[in-house]
Image 1 (tube, helix red, strand yellow):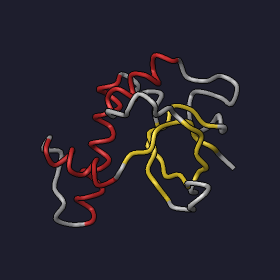
Image 2 (tube, helix red, strand yellow; image 1 turned 180 degrees about the vertical axis):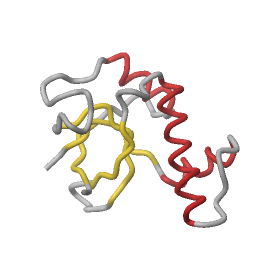
Image 3 (tube, one colour; image 1 turned 60 degrees about the horizontal axis):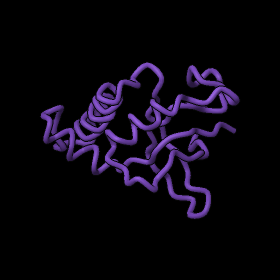
Image 4 (cartoon, helix red, strand yellow; image 1 turned 45 degrees about the vertical axis):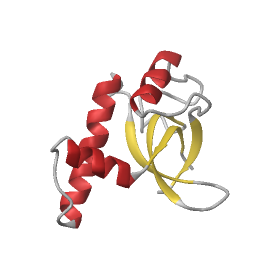
Length: 115
């Protein structure tokens, strides 16, 4: 089982951000998914973590709900350039947190992979 270290993001927030930045529309399911993924890629670039970051589906353990996550590390070395015992730098985590506009008390967490 793979676990990811990162921040949860709302698909709806990514969609609205993507529409505002003119990455795409929400007319069809394909358009929505494209707009969401382009918005996520843009966030990774803006944070300067694009090569190290993954956009993935994760499960909240208590609720069992599936969420989207921008992750900088995983327990699977094939998934990201970081391995289980080689965590991402504090600068990368802070940069991603800043771009996502997360509150100061929110920290990156481990999330169980949805796949």
